[in-house]
Image (cartoon, rainbow, N blue to C red):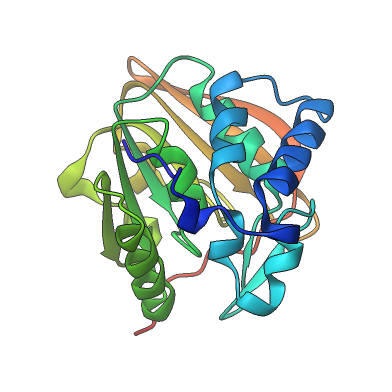
Length: 224
């Protein structure tokens, strides 16, 4: 797993380690308890994953635009989803649907052995790959494709995480879960989305409805 600790990535002023530490204090106050998740959120330079003009807002508890109608989720949502994915133990492999800026993949890749990430927008996929490989990640694999189909060749996965909201969890993704695996996704329309955790137990999928959330809708197809 990679570890983002070099001085070149530390930032200054509103992008400094002190600002990240304040963000983590806020996450802890909001109920995030997993010590490993908090440590990685403190270590990961979120400002690198947004446009330079927005860097000073990177550690605010708000979603930020990354272009192409997509957003970088607020820190609390990233921490909450990561914590939920790890609550039953550390998965050996995670499939992320919706690479976006690459920030969620960066957080996950410092906590689990391998991350596979799928993005449908070519420019976002290329930018995220360039950034993540440039800062030293070697345990993230990238694919440009429609996320509804997942990445069957690399599965099954111990965990699957969606960063965009389908109306219903795609059956093709459920079938790529390993026995005992967990899928976490925002599900529903723009105004009525909830986080849903699906666990594969023997021959059945057990659904658990969690927090109200707001994500961009999950789209079909690829954009080069």
